[in-house]
Structures are given as structure tokens and as C-alpha cells.
Image 1 (spheres, rainbow, N blue to C red):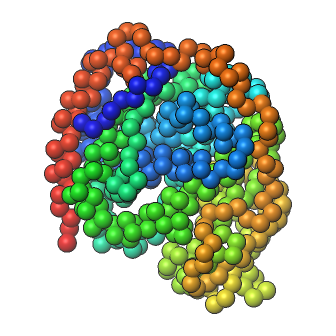
Image 2 (cartoon, rainbow, N blue to C red):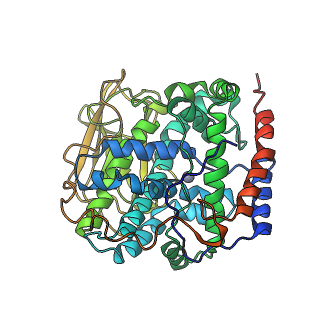
Image 3 (cartoon, protein in one colour):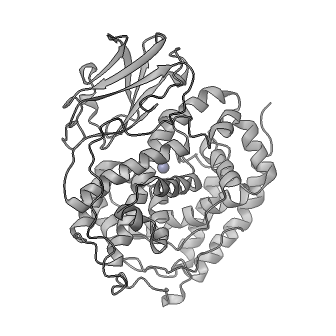
Length: 472
Ligand SMILES: [Zn+2]
């Protein structure tokens, strides 16, 4: 088993964790069943890829307090835990996963955490929670951008051997390819802001237990990341993934392909800046266009509607109220004339990615997308603050990468005060090496790790046999 547990601090999580071998053996058995026979969870980006996107987004942030905060190595385990957290619900077949992907939950969670962490964030615990929240935000946004653009294109280009099976699906396969190219992530210690997570699930009317959240997170940390680390180093599995998804494999690291992880990272960085501005200033900037794909001055639009590359997408800073997506809110202009287009709010209510395609084909030349102030509304009542536009070329690609903010993006630079806290006087509320109850570095009992190890021993050879063959 390739998973290695970090020796970093293990933060006790609210509610505690008691050694319970029967529960963990049951969890291990469930994981096996899921992998071998069960339905395929909808992971979208694989979780190594999700983490990679969050780490790339850090590099894309402008120098300043936000970048300094989220670059802190002490916060990396929390950023990673938050980045994978939403998929834990799928891993244990509980609806908390789906809920955790979306802003109606995430915004309430942000408000709850912020209420206990006034600016400046003087304690390490507050900064840890903020890093976790950034990770969650990265995950939800990345899934939408990836699915709306990259996976949508791959479904056409790689249709011949497309699979929805757990270990052969596009998400798992691209995650294997990501690890092969970029390296995998060692699982950090489990860390969850449990009190706030549970209170916010209760606030939105979802019943879930702390043990369920711990179970989901543990499956992600040990089984899902462990599989990626193992398969990404296995030449046979890497070759099989490339053979099954040749287009997806060839463009995965291409920053010019809309929806690829490098373009997702740009969107996530913009989203983080928006969230940071709101957090640090206590302001509500309202609704903005975070990014467009292609970017202003970019190109590579295909003319034919049937080609996924004909899509112009805009990404909004808050989840959108579907009923507000009217033709009058977004105009497509070619040669000074408004032309008809199809509008699609990908994933519908509360989602951020709005796709536009021609009714039949784009005329040659340049397509301009205009949006009107007040023309779109978020799920929580914010209106688009100002009008704007981007122009992109039909035809050959340009050097401008997709995923950049539009001209005149109004978000102010991140504030320069109130970050970093006391420089070590507060240890974050007891986030120290976990000593109690015979717990391991993950805070789990030895029984739990034994169960996971047994699961791994069962899982690995069977994973190898399942993706050995690709339909010709
Ligand atoms: Zn997801």
C-alpha cells in the first residue's frame, strides 16, 4: 500500500473519535464493495488533480496577504483536507457530499467560521479553518469548470472507449495521468472543522453524523489518494488510461485547452481573491464575472456548434439563480450585430458556469459576449454589478490562455492588514501531535488503520485486473 501518513500535526476534531473496530471493518468492506461492484461516484476532477489545482492557484495569486497566508506550510494539510472534502460524501454514499460542493452550503459555512474569526485572524486555528474553506471553494468551482468544458469535450473526442465504471472512468483515469505527470500527494493527517461543518449541515436541513464525515474523509485520504499514488506509478495503468482517453491525456496539462487543470487554477485563484476580499473587508462585492474561457483577445473558437470548442463560457463569482439567465442578460455580437445563441447554465440552479454556443455556427471573425449590469442574479439575491464584454476570435488559437478575468475586473487588491496573527502565541486551539486513545497520525485507532490496510491488500490486485483490458 503506497499511502504514507504525514507526521504533521493531527488536529483533534470535535466530537472525538473512539476506536471502534467493527465500524472500521465495515467501512473497509464498504470501500471494497464500492470499488469492485458498486456505482461510480461522480468525482469530476480526481482528487490528486483537485489538490494540484489548489496548489497551482496559490502560485497564480498576486503577491500579498492572501498568497502569504495560503502559502504557509502549516496550513497545507487543512487546504488539502478542504480541497478533497466534498467528494467524501460520494465515497460513503451520503448526500453531504453533493451539498458540500455548492455555495448555498459553502457560503453559510464561510459566514459561520468568519463569525468566530474576526479580522485580523489572530489565531492559527482561524487560519487553518480559512485554508480549509479555500480548499472547499476550489473543489466546487473546479468540478464545474472541468465538467462543463474539459469533460464535455472529452466525451466527444474520447467517446470510443468512454467508461462510467469507478476505476475506468474519466475522473479516475485523468487523476492517474495527473499523478504520472505531476506526482501524487501524500495523504496528510485528517483535519476537519467539525463543529462548524455539522452546524452548517444542520442549518441547511441535512442530517449527518460526525462519524460519517470522518469516514468519508478517511476513504478519500487513504483509499482514493492511495489508489492514485499507486496507479500513477504503474506503467500499465498509465498506458491504459492514455489509450482509453487519448484526447483527455494529451490536453490535461495544456493551459490553452478550456477547462484543463491549468485553466481551472486561474478561475480558482480569482475566486479565492473574491472570497478573501469579502472575508478581510467584511464586504459583499456582489456578483462579478470571475473569468471567461476563452479570455479577452483569445481565440480557438470552432465555428460549428457540434464542436465543443465553439463554446464561450463565463464564470460568475456566486452561484446563479437559473431563472435570471435571460437572453437580455447576455448578448452575442458578431460584426456589430446581435446574433442568436444557446445559453446553458451548466448544472443549473446555484452553479457558476454559463456556456454560450451558436445556434448553428459562428460566422468567421470575432465574437463578442456582452453582459449587462443587473442582468444576472445570484442564488442569494446579488445582481451583476456592472456591464462588460470580451471578444474572442473564431479560428486559430492565440497565445492568450483561457480562464482570465475580463478587462476591468473590479475586485480591489487584497487588503494588506490583519493577516498572520500573533506569530505563534496561539497554537490553534490544541492542534498538536495527537496523543490520545492510541490514535495514529490520522487520529484513527490502530484498528482503523489495520482495517484500511486489509482493504488495501484486497483492493490493489483487483484494481489491477479490472483495468487490464480496453475494448478495441
Ligand atoms: Zn467533486
